[in-house]
Image 1 (tube, rainbow, N blue to C red):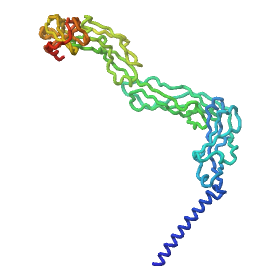
Image 2 (tube, rainbow, N blue to C red):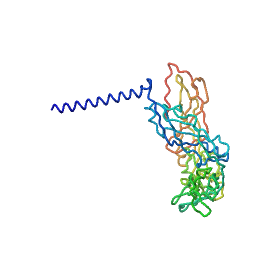
Image 3 (cartoon, helix red, strand yellow):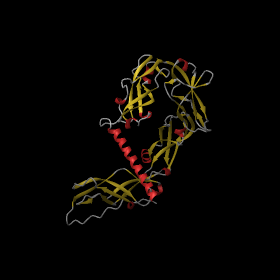
Length: 432
């Protein structure tokens, strides 16, 4: 038992000794250099250089060659030993801008050093004035080749494919003569799928081919565009019904109308996506009340087809011929009067005793109407501050259960005055 206690005590002493040693080492590292941290150097090898401004270089007819151009450099950092052991290659970015290069040849350009950690700076780099890379800039050759599209898939039955559309039919290639000289054309492949029923449009990458239709790798080739937009229009031919939007009113219903449209259909062709959910063309809107009032039996409309479609029928105008199957007009005299919107604190007397109203509808509905079915309602909404005798607009209400329309405008004469204590309240108007 005593030996076990001694063993545990030794382990504790060893751990304490190690802790003290680490503390002394850290203190010496952080303050052992004239109360400052111990200095050290570290070298990070093969830090890659990123070259920018190649588009501006190409605009001057120049290009950067990989051969003879510095791809990476070693960076030596000096500083506090605890700090400089931390960065690796991914923490340092070297950027060289080619936009100021104006001539071909091997030359040196300065690169910029950027650190991901702001505790580091270029002052910690050994030889800070040597931030130069060697670049090999050469004359840029160009060549224009055709763009060819290969089509995969098929169009559904009843649909037709239009002419294939390319965003450009040729493509400019740039590079060294030996890299671009064998390119005869570039090819894109558009897959429209099986039984395509709508237009397909895609941005496609391309491949390089020689005159023998052999695929080339494309190394060292710099195209002016990275993709080609290809569109395959898918068309459908449909027969569309011509219709009119009738606006009904009391006494004038579509159910009581006989009409024909000439022609009643047209045949159009257009983008399948546009025509998929279209089965008719609305020629326009017409009020049955206006049709009844004008007495006209025909009306002509222009045929407006969906945008981007073709009118295969060639007919550009359609004629509506319409007439009411059973329409009767009558004059009915009523002595029933009331009012609405009586101003507060006012009383009203209706002076008009009888009013003849023009009504219309089917012969059965009109024949069933009597004067007791018609109520004239004087509208007082614009007479809140008025006193005296006025001719005011009136609305006509027709009861009896029939579908009756009223034609014309109506007025009644009333006297309106301030309410006195002796005045008995007028009966409320009937609910509309």
